[in-house]
Image (tube, rainbow, N blue to C red; front, side, top):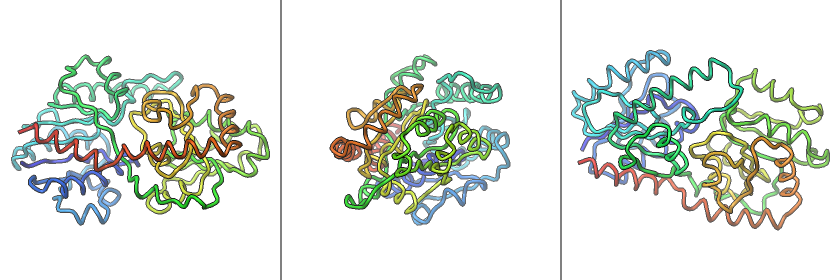
Length: 367
């Protein structure tokens, strides 16, 4: 069986992490299949790390220039390539499939933005979400199997589209649990950490305001570290929300971190907070729990499903509730240890190896 993996859309943190972890494990665990990875000239260097290049996957590069050009080539060029190469299964882990691809199509809905409305978003953003929704719904209808990363995401999409439930699957994503769990428990920890692409739907306004309202002695001992890509203008808008100028000096935007730098950020911080409004799955939550960090997350979308009783949740529109939970957790070592232990245990259920096993089973059904 020949399987092509469409990674043309993998450009940001989660999409890159997914391909870099899934592909080497697929080709190693499933040697009877031939795997080809479709990448673009725009994401090749970011996507193809040493481990991926060392695997036996065949890398195919398509030259694109911008979003519209990529979408057109995805719909027009890729189907011809699949026909010429006699591909049996096309695996698209980023919401979009080439509709006319002459093979079995497996789609993974990683982004549930199209199915979630957030008040107050600018018109251009709403138009982009609307367009993504139309393409996503069409992709779901043209696919043989549609995968979701959580039960919440699946039920949300089923309600919005009415597609046949029988052709859907729920497969959890994974994290490199072993790498993040090697943190030294005796290492001094301080600070509040959040890891995500920093945008309006991640609700960082609430986290900034909650941090600004914390007692001065807490802010003095615990900086707020925000890890993830962020637009400079939006970063300035977030900092401007601080009433207390001293708060702004304690908020650190690191940009994207990978490898040892990311592992170190988890290992050195005291608590983890994710205030997001929209998540189909959250790798940073799993990474934080694997690193033994007590977690606070909003009770929006799939996050309660992921956390269970292993962390604390709050109303994502209630900054006072979030601030109170931060104060409570920082001041209660016994609670931190309890949540740390529960989180480490919970994280063991979310591994890339488990994800790959489920994907291989699904490919086996495509014969």
